[in-house]
Image 1 (tube, helix red, strand yellow):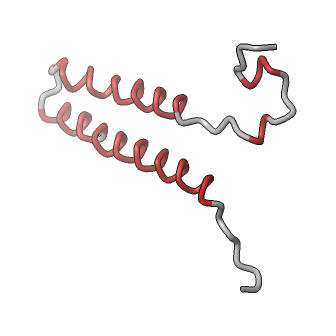
Image 2 (cartoon, one colour):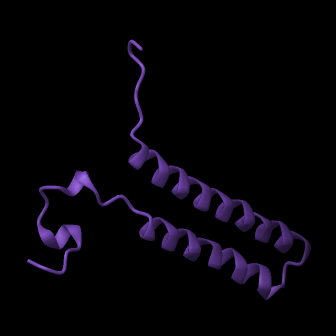
Length: 83
């Protein structure tokens, strides 16, 4: 089919998973500043807002793509435990 890109299924699924997890984390995380607007001294909303970024960082780290882009990188860059 002339000129259409064919997306590899092994690449598309992790990207969709990453997008959904990060997207829903940010949607839920957006509720904390809204709650803090109505209750400015609430520690719950401050903590929830901070935890949102921690969860987002953990999700991005855990779902990172360490595949063929680092194919010829040294083992320390790939995170391999063996040399």
